[in-house]
Length: 292
Image 1 (cartoon, rainbow, N blue to C red):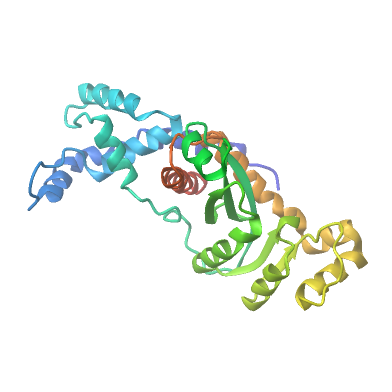
Image 2 (tube, rainbow, N blue to C red; image 1 turned 180 degrees about the vertical axis):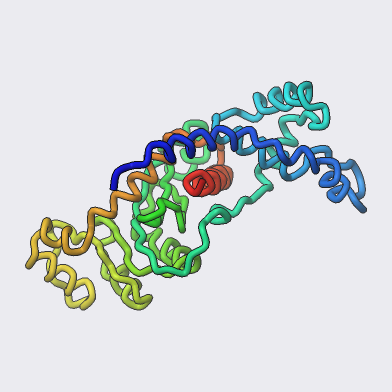
């Protein structure tokens, strides 16, 4: 199907409008009054919607918190109703947002096919805790995605250190994805070629389209995996890939490519908890943007 470039163009333009969406300003004082009603001690000055706006701006442009403080000062000059913030307050409120990465998923009851994989995210500023954990300065974490191959939405995610094999992240991914969607088919590369993976998917009624490793042999430990390996050997890779639609797995690579173009290939946080929170916020924004 040919690409409708006019719709694509308008969608990208709309993303730019969304970055500076200031409709929350109209209800700012009412929101602030509700927040401070009955509050003891120092009252809030910045509303949750304003913090959400600033967090989205910081993530999309990779702005450090001190520069974000300067941004709020300039914004205050243009819109006096919006107060300026300080570094520590902005950081604390931003980290406390705890956004739902799946809030912007489209509603559907249809069974879907998902593609899964992982990618590395650089953590240039996190050398301290990485060195303490690993004994040397590894500079990235792994981001695991389960992606709807049709919509490119991320329906499940996991964040781990770079020594965690994809199979270990599998239970969390499949559980979370199954809670959000009716999964009909699971597409994965050879990293998911494990008897436990095949057995779990079989138990959940999900078709496993997982490429067996090149040196795979029939195993008595998993009859489910044995059937897949036998079929793969009989059809050969090309025949098996065509029959199973394995090429749809590239949807997850497309999602990773889009994600890194939008948000870069690194995290600005310094701890594993901070990195996880930052990546969750980015996935929330990603799902919102792909559904515009």
